[in-house]
Image (cartoon, rainbow, N blue to C red; front, side):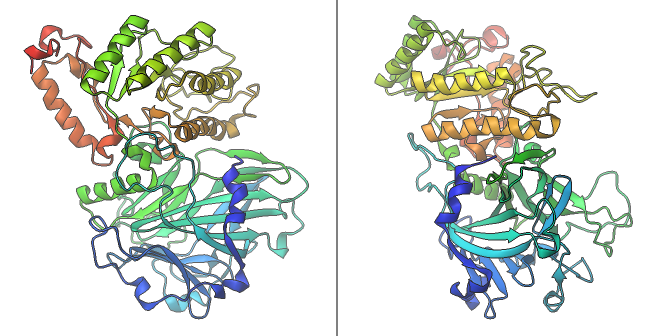
Length: 589
């Protein structure tokens, strides 16, 4: 996926050749000492920075909370990843910095080999390590500030002090093919690996860009943007029905779909695997999950024409400094507030059940009277965002304008994935598999292209500032070779994910608030389900309150309160009769 950020980045960095890293400051003694305050309570420790060693053989990405150390010669490799808060090492062995597949050929990027024991890495072993044969070689290094990964129109109240982009530092290594493989078709491929570290946050972000500098088109079959041989959670000799926990590291990406929690969505791009090089592990079958790989489940299978650049999704790696569930949840919530600060927008929203003019204007008058900040034409209201008729667009624009007069933002509901279109436009699933929601259109079918065109146009023409996008793309792949937006199965996952995240990022740039029952926060959405069962609203009122309190408590372990919606149905909803119904409110205070 070609992005403007990937093209523009080179001009925004202070680039230096590998031989010129002497321009970077030398690592001061105190830089690798832990900040003396609790980072969850005090956000003013040392800022993120890049330093070099005295002999310029190592670079350090550090902020007083975590440090990632890179050996620069004879090739770039991560040789330490330390949690300065606990004094623990995250890393136990070297690996390639990344891996790509080009036209059926696997290519390692950076890395050093020759470690005698993969259980731990001693400093006196590092000098003896040698480049991985035929791996891409680092040719340049660059540093610069963190840049915004999307525009955020800050049009409504959000958390005080939320900064965008977050403050911090970016480090980039540029790689080229070694002379040993210059005769291959991939000889003109250039890869850049990007790292970000943030002030006051123990999180390192990583992604890669791949550029075709040759004269013939190439296909990027696969990529693995992070390979980390981590210290295992524990050691167990025997085989287990229940596997050991993964290392105590929180890993997320913006390649998310198919779930309302980070644990659900992470499984599509974050893989904890056995390490075949870890021959001295205690587990007899050597199946301890201690090798992190970050990559898509399928593809991306993207063609790169001469001069084109592909940008991967991003991964955020946060070593946890505790095994306490509450503290780790606080860490995760702090990360969201810093790295996706639009999640701190938290307007009070009224769902309007009818879309006729009288009902809408009455609802907006009531919203203004009692302090609601948003109103939405909800599901079942008769609103149709796909209706492009002049009368509908005019009427909806009038609704939005009246709402604006009242100081209220207005929006609507649209169903995407859990619907059947027709055989020509629905996803064609592999044998034995069904769409996540039973039925789904392919986002890269002709229907999908037209649907998203309508979404863009509707918001541009009406002034709607809120979208509840139900049944968001859940990760269904598609075997079709006739859909105009993808070539076949191998590229269908990447192309559909790109389609929906491009739209969400556009919404974030325009200030359109996004209610999405999926974990697309890093791509620009504001809120997902907190966690509830709709039929519980048919229970007696007192039981509804108890369940709601339980659901909010459970829903905020790994979400901030503003990241999850719940609702209060004033009229009868899902049955239950008078015992379950809140209106008339004055009788049920």
